[in-house]
Image (tube, rainbow, N blue to C red; front, side, top):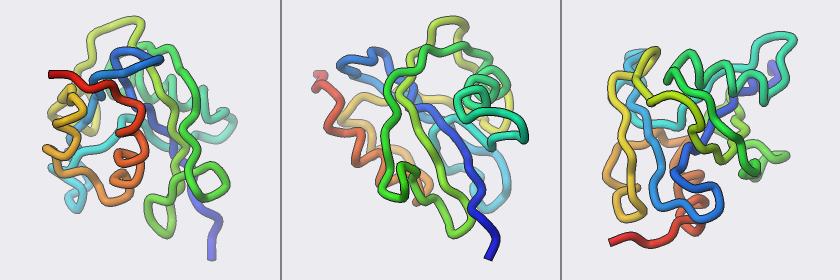
Length: 141
């Protein structure tokens, strides 16, 4: 069996210390994932560190620059298992430059408050991450 493919993503929030909202992105491709919601990010290219890849992906997909906070470690050697083939590392992040737009691979972005985290159809691999992030959010009303 081939080694897992590493992807990186950001849980973009409004406040790194005590977030109230999280940015979700709706996929347009591949067809099997179209219409489902995820954390923005993508594959790590050869010669890139995971952090370099994440900054590149955020520029390409959303047109933003972000300050990264702490990594949110997953159960699989720090990574989150997405499928048999893919493992994801995820960081909290806050947009510092630009206004997020769905430039590549997405057709809609949505800021979600804590109570709205279950309102979108997340990819299965992202559901455990959403559950883990819930405890970081302050309640808004």
